[in-house]
Image (cartoon, rainbow over all chains, first blue to last red; front, side, top):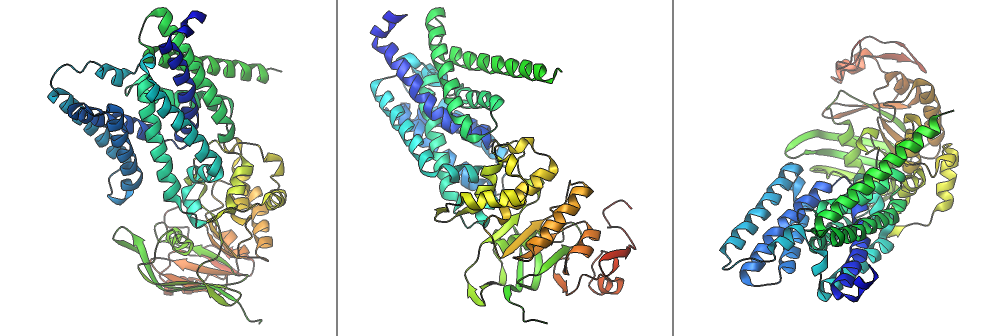
Length: 273
Length: 252
């Protein structure tokens, strides 16, 4: 295993796992706590529209994905109530709209879209130095925002109406968090792909939530479980010679099941006289 | 009678949701040390009244004026305890964090650990400070949200059906706490518990599309008839002694 670190792609993969786990741990805890996991699903699939358009015009697909993701996040956060469409319906529309745009433009692009599969299912071993720079930038940005306004993020996520009665501007922080969520989705697309990004952002925080019921303590645990999933998935992918996106998702779910069983057994033991 | 200090005045307020008006032509004054019970049938605009006072809903017409120390101000800090069913009970947050969130303000959070500690001791929830919301009983939850509402020592406390899902024994203790709090702040309380309304509050406001403020806690049939308010209850003094009819929408 050690000799693998001689390969640059493997080192990149490990670094990507660490950096992605940081942003996922923070943002994942936020979306799981606020119960907006499906908003994230909508954002990630809407991002595919951006990938398709970028392909067609020969631009950087990740930049296209980021553009679409941020726009759809802002639409979901701000429009839902104003245009009187129910939120889940709006998510469904954005979700399918993005996919339809993506499919159309990829079809219109001459030639074979070779690494399209990379965007749908991710590949942690093809992460470039540029990608790593983006991941590091996002990880630092997310950490800084949480340090800067931790209490406000928590209180607004818990009870935005109460925050408004305290005369606190709610939409500023809420929009900032949605943009960070969109960017985290896009960066994750490199690692596990559009189809599987939901797993990496929800399973580790959900696992953490089995053990602790406090936002503050959930974050480091979610980072830890995310790290376990990405590194474990990377190793499994190498050993079994199968796509890394899938092994990362399986590892995260296995960790969830394992922790869940431990928690149940522990409670049963406690209950016994 | 001593002169009363006005803290809140609603003048011809009209508001609602979307295009549908819920409250029309509401005139209402609240004075320091008032304890007003707000009654009315479901959908009559009780919660809407609290929301427009809190600034969660803009008035379409009319004006809401706030006063502090006799001078008109933009707005003052208000304590708000929403209906407990509105909050996600599984949200991963501890008691101490919920209470501390009552101190957040526009410019950031005031440093207020001592205020948080004091109010938690007063509410008897200091031992629960590290407990997550999901592990609390109904009565504990009620005290936590009351603590959040009063930790900033607001001059006005607004309670939206604080007594739902709380057993009777604990309820009595809760109302005693409110009476105590009333020495420092005015209280507006929406409630379905008519017996409690009649025995605890100092006056009653009936909301039914508009608002009729009756300056004592005595509710008479004649009063309710003349105000078209479908709550039928007669009380004299501190305890209701005759209940004529139940709420329209509740079982007898």
